[in-house]
Image 1 (cartoon, rainbow, N blue to C red):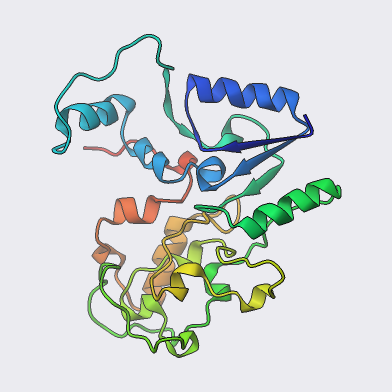
Image 2: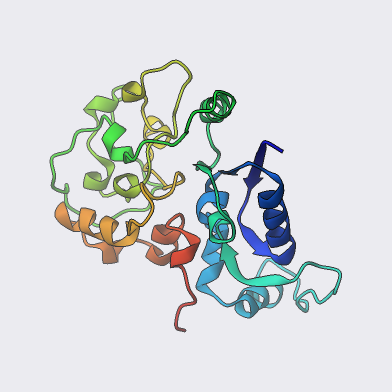
Length: 252
């Protein structure tokens, strides 16, 4: 085949075998979506061993009837952790997003048909955000994103930076492009979360390969006078989209 598209990360032997087979049979492999590109939210399971994860799901979870972990030999064997697709095979094109935008998908397919390269620009959400930044916090603790930001409806350029307001926003370390619209000037596209007066949750993943989003985010918060230790559930919140290769079981 000329083109193979893989969605989702690689969690079990079946996923791995399918990815290897597609690599053999396809000229171009596309990792489509943040889970395929970086592991996504499922990669948070890498913070525990497979045994700990299964025990939590089937034995300890309050909303689940307690039972033994599945042992049916017909089920695909679990790998030791969640892998992004490019940790298993060579990937030619990465298109992150949770979900990717229809416009990006159309642009990707168009580029492939024309024999052109395709890659998203290495820009952060903050690079495309119209909010006002004064490089210092407004005071008070870092709040949960369920609390309302201060804003004037329809005036995104009149809204103070959400991190400065105390709403934890992953814009500084997240790749831009979540609101790509066909035919629009990319410089005029307001990030989707910001358009809803909500902080960025990081769904387009790291800005570039090899970056360290955790350290960069801590530095960004400290720069405006925020204490990263105030982040609610910071292990899960910061690590949601940093990449499966960076996540390992935590000491209990």
